[in-house]
Length: 185
Image (tube, rainbow, N blue to C red; front, side):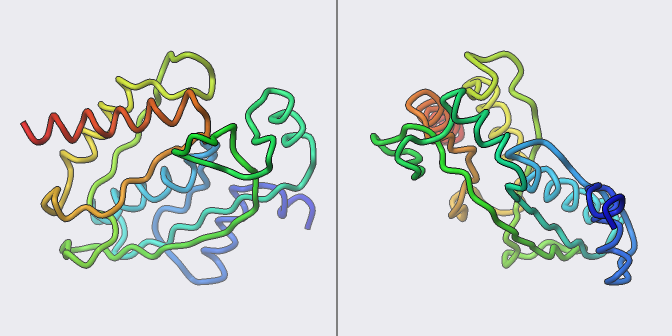
């Protein structure tokens, strides 16, 4: 059980096996964006006809203290232990455990779908390893909005990295504001 229980690639395969699922079965490890990258891949698989339906799950577990200690030493985590994303109190993020899943339906796109457009990109060079790159963020948002299957005015949610820092949050908010100004003109 230790060998098969500690590999992400085997875990997703075991879930597919247990549920009798067919089609692409992939584990993504892209740090904070892994579940979003998986959702993007599932949406594309549905659109390309590789799957009629997709099950996407994201799991975050803190199994050892080493990562949390490293992030705290690097100044990434909130001193108060609370995330204050997009808030003047932002001083880092609070780590937590979570599990979430979503099922995506393939075929014709309906207005009832939750996911209307997506894109995946790497920010490239920025102020630091964890700081967003404003120009790259704008490019990503424009690409995702260019793939929308609905009118942009129907959007009610934008997924953001939300670093919870005085550096990262304004960069993300600024990119989103700039993109909406570009789309309006």
